[in-house]
Length: 552
Ligand SMILES: Cc1cc2nc3c(=O)[nH]c(=O)nc-3n(C[C@H](O)[C@H](O)[C@H](O)COP(=O)(O)OP(=O)(O)OC[C@H]3O[C@@H](n4cnc5c(N)ncnc54)[C@H](O)[C@@H]3O)c2cc1C
Image 1 (cartoon, helix red, strand yellow):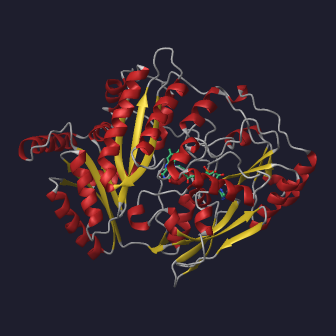
Image 2 (tube, helix red, strand yellow; image 1 turned 45 degrees about the horizontal axis):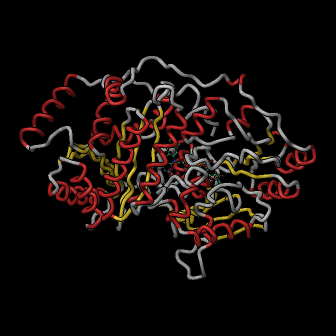
Image 3 (tube, helix red, strand yellow; image 1 turned 45 degrees about the vertical axis):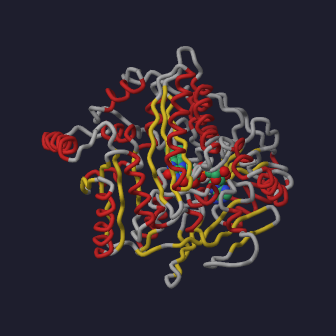
């Protein structure tokens, strides 16, 4: 996998455009009170970045070269800058401003587990810091070295560990190297008739090791489970040696070491491989679009589906604001599209009694044998109708499926126009869904008003569980006149995060802790919980060589 832009999402040359979406610019102009024209802001030029000279003692450099080979030890400026941070909004703003802070001194690319061990050994002996790097898609500040770190900082890029090693067909378990990015992993599995089914929005630019280290969740988790469910075993290089959690379906051997590694964000070691649960490729896959009269009706339908015997792959429903945004991102419609959508609006208003300003767009995915899919569609259809919902066919679902990985580019499009756009996601029991939603929307609106900015916040339910669901909020605003975008972003983001914990929801359902969410961790897991984590990190890594400053 080639590296992403140093200042934004995805590869150079790939960007989001509004030009093929005629309703989008007017929509953004209306809701944010700005003019969408050509870009008004650009990142500083790479040549002008103040990249510090690497702090890499000769002896450490030669041990690293001996460990992985000369060509896999890089002090190249671009390489170091790309590995300095992930892709949180803060990361993007600071990178674009040229505010680099603590750039890693060297990037190493081990090609085998014993090379990872040799790099670990070299770092411990030289009193250096190691930061594992998967795809670099972290959204919670998990990759940046502390600004005041004086020791050499080594970014360990796992990208060469990218193979499926073996598949145990009887157990449907695959042994996979940790640096494999999503697309390469699914391609290798598909060639052998299997699928992992883990599809985060960051799929093209994130890796198995990164997913495990952040407790990631994919959009089809309703069927496949989160990465914490899919990971059955793993191997990790740690300061005291090789940690092995064997792939056992269930075990009663004390607190789960496997679970301790899940979400450890590089603080316990470098994951080299994992054994993950895989499934046979489904015979049929379809995502259907639905409309509900209100978000509340859509949420109630999702809860009823979770409570029923249905097993679907995707449950997603957007609130009215996000539904309007989705409609605004439609590409240039054909005459037939226009007629159909006008006819649909009339039908919704006159025959079904919807107020189109409040309706909620939903997607529900089905996978499995033809017979299973047909049965599930019927059963879900009954639940949807009971909540006054309406199926709008597979066209919108197919479109959503195609463009789902394009949305991360929108943040750069907005930043190019001086606008902050970001996300905050959480999970809670079903009984808390509506109160959390109401509290977050009210808190964000208050924060926009206090700052004197015209902001927009929207939300969708993105993952359902037996006992609750994930709500995913997206917000955007231009800064106040003379205001600092980053400082004002901090205000809005903090208000939303605080509202989560105050209302019985989690700090993060799948974006991890990093540095962005660390200050709320005590409220999330209680002080003894924080002490346990500290003791764990200090016990395994007393010299604080492993990604210091993250989580706690
Ligand atoms: C626009 C956008 C959309 C996103 N959508 C989703 C989503 O839908 N679902 C979701 O779950 N997340 C999402 N994320 C967050 C991010 O993609 C996940 O956290 C992802 O799991 C990170 O994987 P990565 O390979 O990029 O890891 P990195 O960003 O490279 O690293 C993340 C953390 O994991 C550690 N790490 C990485 N590899 C290893 C390893 N082999 N051993 C030990 N530690 C390691 C790093 O040190 C760091 O602490 C999104 C992020 C962005 C910016």
